[in-house]
Image 1 (cartoon, rainbow over the protein chains, first blue to last red):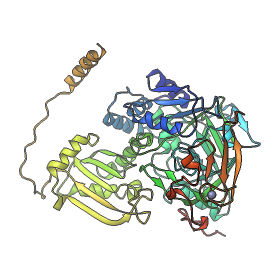
Image 2 (cartoon, rainbow over the protein chains, first blue to last red; image 1 turned 90 degrees about the horizontal axis):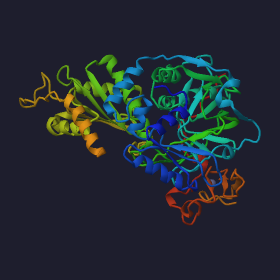
Image 3 (cartoon, chains in turn orange, green; image 1 turned 135 degrees about the vertical axis):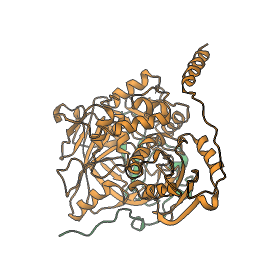
Image 4 (cartoon, rainbow over the protein chains, first blue to last red; image 1 turned 180 degrees about the vertical axis):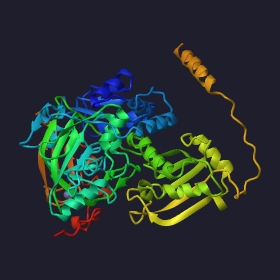
Length: 476
Length: 74
Ligand SMILES: [Zn+2]
């Protein structure tokens, strides 16, 4: 796991046959979205770089960088064929190495400052922008690391937030940002607005893949995404100072847009094709003015195509939704074995757990529904036994088929918090919790007939032998 | 000029292709913040052909605010 920047990861992907280049002359719309959809639909879909876009010749767009399990495995330094379950446990081990080291790079020497533009800012001249989905309101930045600090606590490195928020380009130097009430950045905006002060912001595009991954991971407010990225990458996170503020930014970003969120102003934003596979509506959101654009020489604009699931965002938010939820459950409920919350950022989650006593699995569901992320996101919660792999949907369906009796195993808790972008959340922000307990009853619960499961033989050794034989057979 | 989404006379051209090829121009509406490129599909940039569900017929100030503006602190 040694990627200092996006470029070194793209080289790794290319060496592993997981990156392709499209050299044909293409129109920004609708062709870029067609390419994004195709890349993510292919088995083990590759990243794609385009550099011959009409009107923007030579400017580079990268899509689908995280868009397959093969690419995610390579990001974590694993063989590209690693199973999702093994990727989950590898990520878990790396997670425990928090905090990683920070290395400060002199601003004048930071690659992200190779080119500095302060006058006549025009985002369309500097970045090959495109409309992602047909009914999006404009060109959006969908894969940026957005950096802000708490104006009430400006010297605290750990509450500095690095998050991924969608941003709508409104004009040459104005951008609108979607903040939702429970987002960390909303706290920073609120604190700045209480004092009627502009909030410095840095939009960092094209980062090392693990930082992008961590920016979309729900972690506690006072933990640093940078230190997590360093821990998971296994090398120090290289940061530098922004030119116009005290913000710490990734020194190796492809682009950095520096600006200020205007206090107490809201403007129309959206719609935008969102992660549930549907468009979000129009809302009033915060706006910022870009004062400086800096970038590397020959910068690469990395963006995210989002369509009906699965697309790149489902890979990007897959394991990083699972691991923090697992860690939070495990703190008080050591019986939990694994968490698969890969479905639309955890709207549906499957937990493998032992049943300490009758009904215990349902308590695990209540715990999930009261984690910071689970409160609004986790609405469909499935509990399976400890010996069931929650990442293997055939095994999960087996559990539902032979272990669920709906009259005692299914519960709906009405009118709980909901995720506003979920189309079933109505009014936006309200929802319910649906719990299916597919674990075997444990005393004193005993409503299942005495059942003897078939034991699995010790087959791991032969898995490798047969896989190698099959690979050899396929080469013939 | 007329915005293709809200149909108010609040749109203008604000930039063109940066490589000097004249390949396209970009327009934006200062009222509803819709922007478009003149090379996009007709059903996106022609108001007659646009899906009615994605037209904006309301007033900007009536839209929902997700992060409310807090009271000022003294
Ligand atoms: Zn308009």
